[in-house]
Length: 275
Image (cartoon, rainbow, N blue to C red):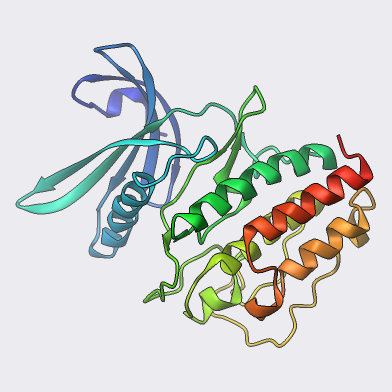
């Protein structure tokens, strides 16, 4: 495993290695000028095929720089490192957010799940209103701090509304059908990803999608989704119905926007007096 001593960043003290992902590592760093702490994402190109990970990091910075929402992790600076005139590394200086992901520490109380996902949904609705689709919402991209604060922490696959991607991007357990078939993405794509994430968080089980983990894709006319309230009896039937409505194969049959979804969740919360 990497250690703080293996990375040097001009003007910063590297405090702690936090974790790693696809061709990236995350570090906790301290600004030597003002003692403020940040997170630093480091993406390194080691092979020709890795260039797409550099592109995702640059995209994350460019999208984040156009957003200002308390539930979306802020991005402060990008550093591009070249060797022989070719881009070899990208470093992103980001807001440091201490806590656990929903994937790593799945909340058990439905009231807490609802609280978290209302905030996530409101942030996604904000992104949509600014002309962007998140396009990769999943429990591992939701961070909950020790103070209960919620953050969306990865915008690497975000794109303008209406984008048709040149390749399949998304996470198998949460990907929308239109992402697999490379059709235009819009707010209803986020509705699907959001609902798939909410489904897993409430049940501990993923939904079936067109992109199995084993690779390739499946042509299906029905995802045959078991209602979440049939798996977890603590889930209100009305909330289970909303989630399955959001997981329709045809985007036109889903709620039209994240605002619609959040409005329904709040009505359910208030009607059932979910704290």
